[in-house]
Image (tube, rainbow, N blue to C red; front, side, top):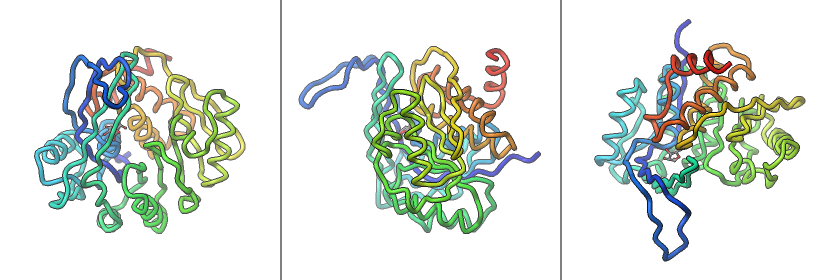
Length: 309
Ligand code: RIB
């Protein structure tokens, strides 16, 4: 079976990772951390790397500035086998930058300057879609919202299913995404989209039904961290529990989950099996500090599943 061809559209950032942050600062207050690192990231970069490591032929549509950070990002992606032919080097903007603060439980808060990603537009997406055949499109909300909608519409014209990883958290109308294959927010994103808290399983199901009614996808898949993932197909909700691991950094775990799920569906797996695999890939990701460097490959996920189940 040949590798599925996945088009990832969205953000490319240089991440400034700061570790050991004890609490979030208030304005005018300085808070100490223990170490830092500049690492290639951005939701789309992470997803493209995850898709490539997990067995797909991944192509990325994104924008970087004509600066050192952009150069480092493109090189890092190419080294993992991501096709960067449709990454535009934008002379008018800087490469996106995301300072990310990680606490000792592995939870993070990030601030983003999207830079060149703010110029990512329909024409960039069209170039890739017109040039090649794709089995799935994977996108997020970390780009101009009109580009999100047009990406879906262009893919739909070609009958290519689309997966929306609904991060970062924001409230948007899902009207123009009706009929999308999968919508997958995390807890904060679910609350932002629906206004429904994600504290109990009953509320998760309520939120999933709400999202389903707004976007009529094939599946709503809620990523609920240490609890796992909740799948809703329009009639039945099922919870796929997370794997228990020692979490040191959850950055890129959601991206890894989304790319793993899409890759598995493209390889013919059912939604429950694909979600279990995606939970395993995300679990491995949180055990390592970093962004694209913390994303496992297919062999590592298989070994983890074999040992765990
Ligand atoms: O999902 C994690 C990513 O979100 C980070 O790599 C950061 O760049 C932000 O975009």
